Image (cartoon, rainbow, N blue to C red; front, side, top):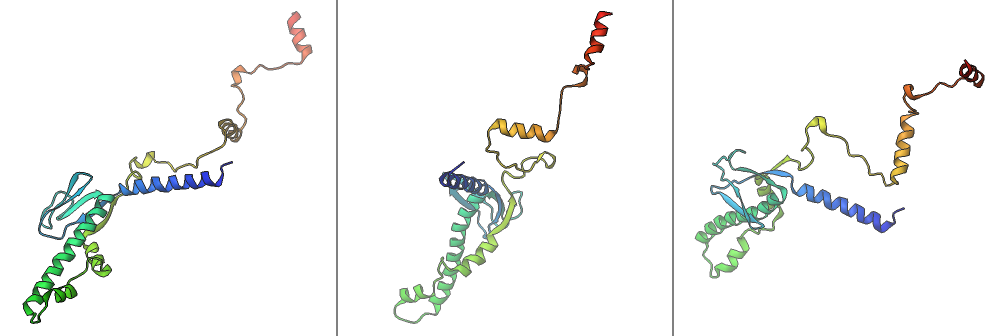
Amino acid sequence: MPDAHEEKKERHDIVKKEMERKSNDEILIHNPSLKDYFTRYGGYYWEVPNQDKDTGEGKGNAIVPRYIAVHYLKHKVDELILEESEVIVEKAKKKYTGNFWPAEEERIALRTNNPKLRKKYIKQCWKGLHRKFGLDELPEDMRTEAKPIDKRPLDEALIEEIETEGPAGPPPELVKTHKPKKEEFAESIK
């Protein structure tokens, strides 16, 4: 019987495996700007085309693994907030008549950690789940439900399987018919 530590480790392994699978889900992302966006992850570049360019997934859209989509959002949303902030700061700078501009600029500039602003841009960039990784790889007719893992010894599991199938017995052609001993003796002396 497994102890609590083994059960906890097993649950941890299951959660870790699911997190790894989920990180490879395919996500549809969007680039709302006029320039192509290249995000770098693990030494590789991933392109998200600009809003007017179609690479097969729609204008400005790309299908990437979830971990790339999350990485893209983190950096793209920061970029979009900073672009909006620059526009606001430039307008304010033209109207400013005070003596110390840096303090005023810091006060009016947008923050990249503002949840409402981040949510606004995430809604523009995240178009949703395209395909769950590893769950729909097999054709519909080949899929089966996952069976729970049987931790009993193999022989016990096989015995139960045989018992549920019912009495099998040998094939009829191999079964000898038993006659009473008197009939067997009578046939043998003939």
